[in-house]
Length: 367
Ligand SMILES: Cc1ncc(COP(=O)(O)O)c(C=O)c1O
Image 1 (cartoon, rainbow, N blue to C red):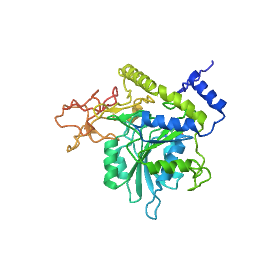
Image 2: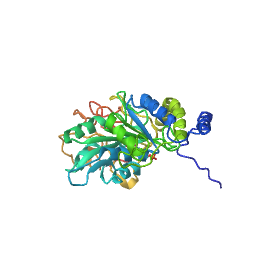
Image 3: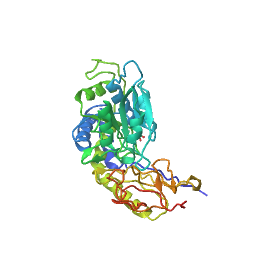
Image 4: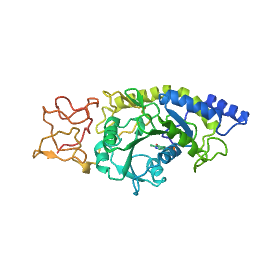
């Protein structure tokens, strides 16, 4: 029996990209040059509302150089950066390689992005920054994270590797914190084959990243600091410029595909599809459609969606690993949910008023 390999994501590279590569090859100017400069300008205007954009050779390099450029310090101690425990290795690696310490905080099991309560619990005297990951194209809970960061005087960094074009109330990811990093790896929202982009509203930080990507030089042989070679080539940038023109259309298609999958899976017992916040104006790019199946039978009790304040646990309750006490079977409740108000209403088992807006496992055997 032959087995067909089904790729998780296949880059869409067409004739226009090939023509763009040919043109750069024919020009003889293949390393970082005018194509990179034009790509940075176009990416800045289209994706991050005019923030500075500095192109590099990978998403990992983007977060590495941006972290280095921040020159993190925690008195004499090792500076700590809080990162999600569920992400790609580059998020933690790019912190560790600078000499800082990645400290893992938990994710919200519904959104897969950083859980603000877990972040708060991970803060120590040496914490200097929180790095969010807008995983699968869904923006992290930026209101809550920014509030925590402001209260503790921490910087916020954004790993936007999977979220080109995602936004909250029209404000694009990559513009909320000190910097954002994007990846152009072939399985991402758009590709340059390999490549990355640092975005920032801080002109001096952008300049430092430009220096770090090119041996500490802005002008040839005028070395201002110790740097690396993390430059993007003009070949890659030319591909990126073509892909950028297709990005918005692809994002619409991804969203439509996600909606179709969501609708199709709605009737399947036990399937938890990606939650898409609505009321805050959060828009996901649906880069991945990561759905969860039910826990194995031994993993009962079921997870119940809502968390209520001020109630003690009745005898019939079960404790869920991620939420507070919840009764089962559900009884109508008059108190209001403490869950974020912006989740779309669906499948609330608690019949509460107002309805709980968080999704839950369905189709499990009930204790
Ligand atoms: C969340 C996340 N961060 C960082 C990266 C690193 O990007 P790159 O592979 O371009 O170095 C990736 C890419 O896989 C990613 O998914």
